[in-house]
Image (tube, rainbow over all chains, first blue to last red; front, side, top):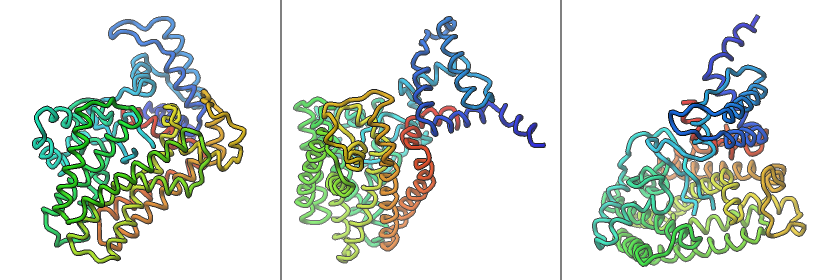
Length: 106
Length: 335
């Protein structure tokens, strides 16, 4: 009875990302693999097409995420993977958002 | 111990809290050749990703640099001059401690300018605190020594990958936070606080500083470890494992590594977070008894946040580390 509703929810891209986020938080191995695959993704100059090598890495990443989420994953675009690599691997952030620290941890 | 990389939060606007104006006044009174360095100190110390970041933007809350303002709520008759003086004295003490720490561990290069600025920070702190309450400068100087001594003790222990008990961890951590008390004590004295009120302030602030320290040391232990400075989580895990003598002291495993598994298996991060929550609860109790409303609700909020987080850390060891590493990503794609 509930299957169609669940299926509809899982096709929501935002919900898929939330599930990926939770999945990464809960499993160190997944987190490491996610980061490793992102780090392998070659950065292309802006405006350039995705290279064949990059496509292979992205396909591998999408396949792994799909496995983690039991198939309910539409896949990441090249732009998404590049953006995430910047944030997660290279720790680049949008500096328009305030940086913060939690404590005076000398 | 923890010195973090950059993360984003949702504060998108400049905050302009009292510390910015007060620090600006300090900068303007400096010799002209030091003003540029002093203005850009958050960036120079690696506490901000770009130039032009205000001190109020560096931390996600006002407690770290403006604790006396929160303590002052318990003493409504204290004059605004005393509150401003104690905020500035506190902020300068904390900022100077960052300078000293970065110099000691080589994160910033020593230069005549940075050494001179450090001296000005201390000297001006002493002047403003002495105006708040005569004798406060001497207490602040003593706290400098205590902080430095605790930092040295920590470095000696962690760099040798020594095993540590939670009691040692708490004692050294509290020593490191010594500079976080004198300005608030000066405010208390100026406000005519009783001995029991001063003691409540001491306990409330101890809870705040230790809670923050424990939380950061848990979330950032891998970064500390990778820098080669050792990490409390590792030393605490070794103690719990009772296998220290079998470890090579120059061990620097790669991921997935033995050290991480030991930290996870020993539930050290969970225990550190539980201790942080205990400290926040203590801060909440004492600040509530004092009548320091904002400090009390901030502490309660921190404790409740950890109450939510703890079951996840218990079920999924390392959750707190991964949550911090993914925080910027989550803010970007999930908000």
